[in-house]
Length: 195
Image (cartoon, rainbow, N blue to C red; front, side):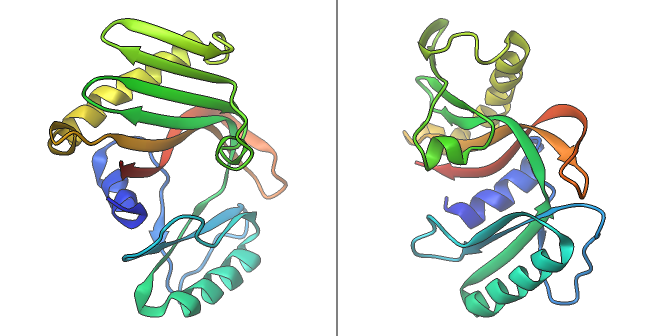
């Protein structure tokens, strides 16, 4: 499963995920919120694809038009409301174990700068912690583990064939046009792939 299929799988999964839409030039964007623009290709290398994160509607629209022209029939542009990440990470689910990696704030701190606050490996009922054991609260850890049960049901065929499912997640907050956080944090997934 590549990034594009992962977007569709997440959307249909019932897991908490970003409310993304496929961009089209006639689309109108709400100017009262910030936006994220991402790309996904039908095949080939889908790592480090162009994106624009946390921009106003006008810039998001202009960026989406540019990406749309660049991709043409090779992929799609997706767009969704921007959120502020309090904590982020990856969740790897296999039949044998669950691996949670977590970092403060944006996921890019983990995937780009290789920073990590904690890694938690769970096999059966045994937990191994590397890093700050208290970084994720008991509630946050329980919420991630609850999602793993759904993930195992959704992707049982892939897991049965020996593959793992890798998801990217954040505990996020909505934001207004001034990047001021609104409401309470919530768990959200925004990428999914098999490995």
